[in-house]
Structure formats: C-alpha cells, structure tokens
Amino acid sequence: MVTRHLILIRHGAVGEEYASRYVGRTDLALSEIGRLQARVLGQRLADFGPDLCLSSPLRRARETAALALPRVEPQIMEDLREIDFGTWECKSFAEIEAANPELFEKWKRFDQDFAFPRGEGVAAFLKRVDAVKRRILTESSEAAAVITHGGIVRSLICSLLDLPACARISFQVKRGGMATLRLEDGKAVLTGIQNPETRG
Image 1: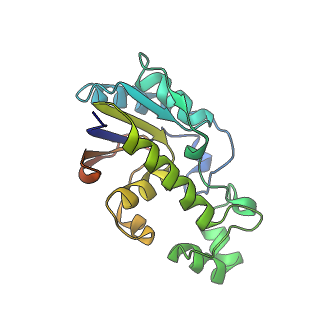
Image 2: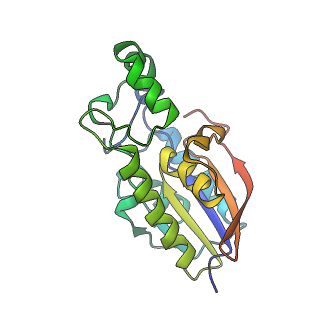
C-alpha cells in the first residue's frame, strides 16, 4: 500500500518582525501564535490520523511537528528545508524590489536560470522538491504529513498536480496552514487548503 492521503503543512508563525520578509536558512523558533497554530493543526490532523511525518530540519518546522503530532516521531529530511535566499535573507519584498527590480522580476517569474545572490538557484531547489515527491510516492502509509516551508509546499503541490512550477503563486498556504491531497496510482487530487484564523 502506498500513501493515500498527503497533508502538506507550512510551519507555524514566527515573530511578527519577520512578516512579509524572505526567511529561508535563518533557524527561527515558533512565536506564541505559531505554537497555538501548531496545536490547532494537531486537531485538524486528527481526522487523517497520519502515521508518517516528514519534517524540515529547521527549528520552526520541528517545533510544529512536535506540537501538532506529538505521538509520531518525525523523520528529518534535509531536502525539506526552505530555499536559501542568499543576500535577500530576512529582507522585505519592498526592499528587494527597490534595490534590484530586474532580478526581482526574474524571481517572480520563477525563471529556471534564476539564483538568489549568493544563495540557491531555482533549478537546484526544484531538484530537491522532486526528491521529496519521489520519497512521498514510494512511502507505504495510509496518511502522511509533511511539515516544511511555504516555497516547498507550493512547489510540491504543483509537482504532484503536474502543473508548471511557476503556477505556485496560485496556491496560498499561510504559516500554520495546510494543503490536503488524495493520492492514487501516482496521481494527486488537491482536496483542500486550510489557513489559520490567527495572524502569522
């Protein structure tokens, strides 16, 4: 039996000072709101009863896993870490666009040859996403939870639905939110996206 239900979870909120900023490799803890969001996720996950949890190695994801699924030991997967934003790390969208509008436009288009200054390239990032997808599709589990970051969640949705990577902007999964998919014969159907009512 392969995984039938997949829950893609974006870690809970971090400090408000990081709102509308690119946060990738910075290893932040959950905020108080983030911890509340993780507990609410645990209640939502009860309907699926996941017996497998894959998690990013970053602290905000691991803390979300511990609070949302305290009875399931997470398996840490390095490929689930967020993209490395390089010199754009922790800068606001407005700051980056003002400083380098042409490069910012390439990022918005998700050009395959784009790379963050002194950071990760889109092609390398999508290679990691593909590795995660292969792992998911070969797992034997009734329901699997994947706790990771916004970029990974949206790119995985696109990959599983056979959509172009640039379609990721069509899916909004906020911090503390989750997307659910049904998998059958290697195909995926998006069954819902739930975002938290609390800020973050």
